[in-house]
Image 1: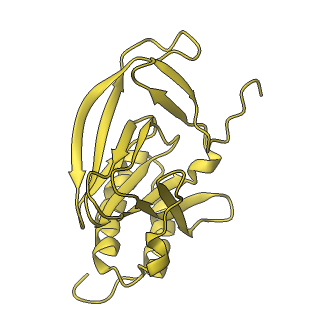
Image 2 (image 1 turned 30 degrees about the vertical axis):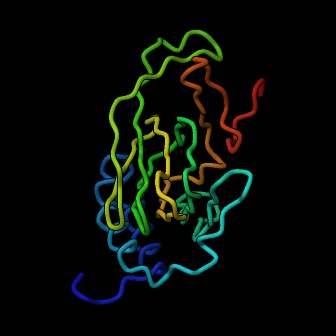
Length: 191
């Protein structure tokens, strides 16, 4: 590693090599985590437009890389001040590295048996605030929510095994005890 610059191009090449050698999500995550940390710390790839957010959503996912088959998707995500997203899963493994500012990840555990369509009980299972250079990772099926408690737009680097717009994933409403396909999911009810 040393002091040599680590580029997005090198990160993608490393992701491809890892994906070719390891298929078990836990092994992939273990190898991607230090590389994501390294790229997030480099910051040469960050551009001013990466701080742009969608005013309605309060955040924006800026695609940095995606393979033609929608695997190995890399995003920089901008979170608006005070913004949050509901608990959700990704339908794939995920590695998230802090780039600029804090991001609070709350992890959730589903405690119902999943037998009732549209119904889910999730309870908090831990929380981890990441700052620049810190990393959290999730296996497929892990549920988390994200919030930006700061007064600035924050950035985080997100790497997924599959672009989350092409996975079957779900969103949860804790108070209403409901679950439904995430709006950015490849899942089509009744299909």
